[in-house]
Image (cartoon, rainbow, N blue to C red; front, side, top):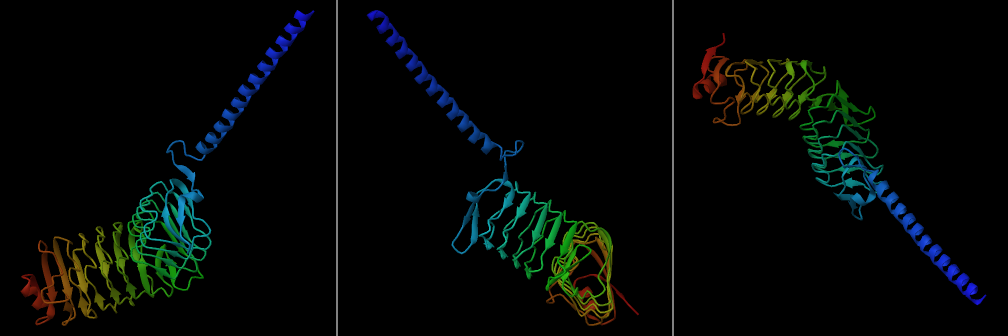
Length: 347
């Protein structure tokens, strides 16, 4: 009887140990499953093909006490700028090529220079809400940017903001904007007297807006698909590099009020073989036709047009064969003789 009691106690002890160790194993398995679920949830935020996060996280951003975003550490396709951000400092997203979409914070007012330089996979930009200032070259070289919306509060857009954005096909400005407007996806001043930017996707014949008075610096820069520009009768000024590298431009007709064509305005327009500056033109800047057609004919119908900033300035390249037409004893004749160009007297 005593042995049976001892044996029963021994068996009970073994059973307790078994239950104890079994519970430990089950607990460990649950712990592993829990850890695995955490790991899997983290993996699920990644794009399986690119190993890039689908959306940004709050810890990806460094924001100072004034609400300025000073650094971005993330690696996400969709960047959601935190609501506390009031300004994005220069170059914060420099060449983050993984970014495809950017959602700005509701409190954002300023985007500084080069902020999204080289973010070549961004496809759409909406400068809405409280955004007032867009700095220089902010979206420089965003090669796949296709659509741009400029909200009503944007009052300052820096030079070259959309430089190298060769895929832009749609640019729209909010009708309530007091500084800017849009026309055929071109960016203009509110009163449409100044053309600021033309997308590189524009092709064929371009007819300038009827009230346009000025074409700004770099406005048609690298618009390689345009072939002809028809001016209106109100255009007065064409700024530096306005048509730089429009390599398929074969014809540009000036209106009746054109006054100044500034330096390098038609540089590298290699198919532009004949240009007539009307009698209203008082100034033509240096290198205005440099790097253009190998054989070029240029006519000056104003006897006193100032050619270049100084007597040493050239409006052509050395390797171009130039024939200048103008009146006898005109500044055109003086320029032709000094620079050893062919000169033909207009009667």
